Image (cartoon, rainbow over the protein chains, first blue to last red):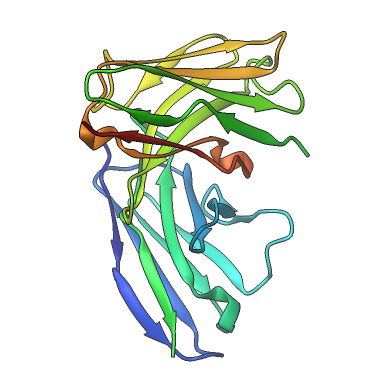
Length: 107
Length: 115
């Protein structure tokens, strides 16, 4: 099973700050790495698919990069509405897995 | 855009069974490259991938549910099912059906396993 480890687990950030969340896989997963945002009481929402492809309607401040085992979600200029938990997810190797999540708090 | 509606959750005793349903507004698991997953989230916890069914009929499961859960589909009803048997307290969660990296998620159905 591919283990996805996100860092940090929690981050308190100020609006307009640049935020970077990393996701490290226990083995190479190619480009089958996706990012989701989940706010309390809501279903997860897809932000980025296949490492760097932005999903329809997602603000341009969200971006993804990486390869092999190391991947990054970047929020270029944080907005208050970005307070949420972010998850990475791999669909390269069964069983598919999620990272443990990174909670962003807005100061 | 396809919409997904889950149902079938409830309060069940350990060892019991339920059948969860995921009704789609249009065909979702008919083409060879289509799929539908179940993902669960225990109270206050992260997302856990549970199972997937592909258009060719192949099915896969997380180790934690293998042998107890069965995913299936009814293409005529545009519905995917998750039969959950031998339920354990640790199966308590909100169960989502989703085309995960297709960007389509339902609102979830809650399964509570408790005596």
